[in-house]
Image (cartoon, rainbow, N blue to C red):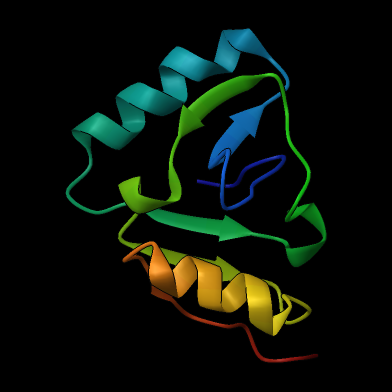
Length: 86
């Protein structure tokens, strides 16, 4: 799943309520869930919550994710795979 925003407290919120049910259904039907999220989107948030970070098996953020944010993700029990800098 590619979110428009994400953070430790709000999980994965989006701006459009029309997408919430589709994204939730995709999570429920999947064997594993991976969040591929740009680090520039970390700490921003939309109005409608889709899932918490712990609902994902793994998160792959961009390379600019701060160490504090990375530790927070690891603390959620979700695997973190940091992308290599370009």
